Image (cartoon, rainbow, N blue to C red; front, top):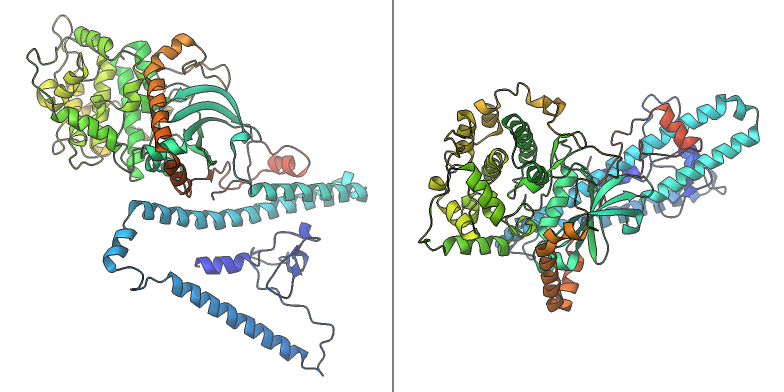
Length: 599
């Protein structure tokens, strides 16, 4: 069935008998009521689609007049006009040689932005009609249950006035729900609880949606700034991935919306903080704990790869710890494109213009010495590197501008495994130039660390895995299956049960609004580590002011297809308790949301 067929079918959907006093506007020159088009209870299929309603006989019509024939002629003329209109519209949609040349048509059709808009349009129509059918079916189910209770419950059977009042109240609630379906999320729909994040383009707040009482992490970004710094595509990429995922390893998107100045991403709140904070608090992890987290990281990254995306920017800050102590991956801004041109170009220039240091030496093999150097140069809380970009976890082929594939994420995970066990990334130096130099000469800079007494920190199987991840593309591990078969993960018997294992650390939370594992943005001492971040934000705002009206005009059409609202109960399966809450004056609550849709 194509879209036209679905559209025609939807013209004839009968919602329920409750619309007895609400006429539905049909085709020109006549109208009909839902009560005249109710599915017969004896129908074995109980289809929600019906044949087109027939026009009632005109009171003047009789076998002795030509009125019926005139009526038929009018209908035929209307049908011919509609068919001609459809044919013209179809012709307009067909590509013509006069519109674009073959080369221009091919260029436009292969443009990433065009492909994204086409995908958004497909998702819009598919989700719209699927959601409409789901709503009609669920509404009929609710109506049927209400009617059954009104017909069997003694308190209503013995009191017709109360029965009528209850039915009227139910109809009112259904109409309110139907009106609410058309409403898009707005900033004022959310109650801000506390700030939990700060970036160069905006802030992240712990928030609660007022009507559903959902807790979320609300990311607020400046539209004009995103356009000015060429970050629009990255935000749209993150939104698209978040709406497509159903994986328990990836952070879920609840709502996406916009206003003239901002874009908003309301995401699942993951309360345990990020993996960077965990490393900062512990220094490094014992081998069993490192294996636990790295195994879950591989599972999370594989979930992203299965969607057809490469993350491209993995670092400890991108892995969050949920309320049960398990890993979730976030921050997908670069996952469908390339690293920001300004960011990658600055790194590439530094890499290309490196001068040989007269006093340069290969990194020390002493773990204690390297930890001291890393903490002195990078610091635990140098957040500017996290936001602006650091080469510590980025594969060399990315920095050199060469072609690459999804295995660059494996390089990044190898660097994080190294850091989790040692307390510093494998290529860190006393200054940034040394880090770039180590990365450029990574084959000699990647050394197996030792303790004070000369013992190797890594076991043989650990070092073997690291050298198969931090490796040239031709010798790097290629598939998740190959990763699973490494001896390092021999203790994991069933990868499907990773989230059933007991984690090394479980967040101790007072309530669902507990943001204690995130920085306190009201504490001046805690804000000292954001000094560079705030400086960068101020610099970005100054750039925006220099852009003038051009940037303001340009941003208005750059976020088409951004709005999203999740389904709290995508299968629309109800139990009696939920129905009674809805139909008999209770609160809808969090268990059922008939309003969810994508538009």
